[in-house]
Image 1 (tube, rainbow, N blue to C red):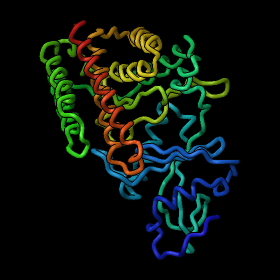
Image 2: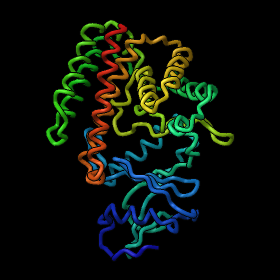
Image 3: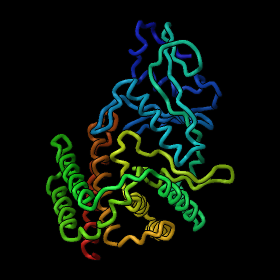
Image 4: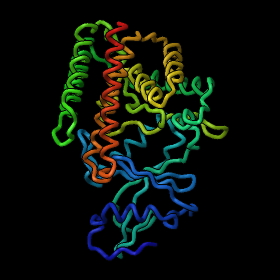
Length: 351
């Protein structure tokens, strides 16, 4: 086990030490052969044999605040509870990362102060995640039928959080302005004109075609909030279809029209070169939920989600861990803004 210099306060263990400890297979009770490490903007994920452990980074971004151990524990607990709605067999438990008085870290039961919290998950077969299956051209009609069935059941059971038509239109306009402020941040260095063009067209679409939003506020649910292909597991002979990694840190961002969630999934599938899969998903959703969403509204929703993804891509420019890839993240942000522009123009054209 890695020796760490004795310390009087367990809380002084830094992130690098935690990552180094969790990267070593010998530190896990079930003794995996190796540990695969994945770093995201918000977390580290350690895939250890048939289990995976997520360690949240101690950072703050917009409404997300993980700066203290207590805040990360609360977020981990929320992640566990919320994700069990769509993936009950995947999200297992919270695991404390402890530091003994001699400075040794451990995730085994025993003494020592808690220096962080991990979400323990069951590992899923990676080739059956929708993004991987798309890349391998292995997405069948049965796969999509089962995935949409899983999502439709979730949407029907999810807690209803309705809004009036007027409040929903106001909320949409506020979200557009908030996105503009985020993308105009001086430290990101994005071209203001490209952001303004999208914002102007989205606000204009609501002004001209707001009637297409009529009744949508009544359908709002406490949903997933981050419905991307890499979060949709298509199932195997031994593992059920499920959806993982919902947005846990802000319930307001999960308050969505199910059709907008599906628009997000369609946007990302299309970006992966799977426009046919995207169309099939939307058609199956409309049938399963008896919700024939107008094409113009779906295109508008895709435009909005593309702007949100542009924000997240741009935020990577602030993370020192991704400094060497700043050019790629800036290009990614612009790519999403281009998508947002294309889809809002389509929304106007087909309305």
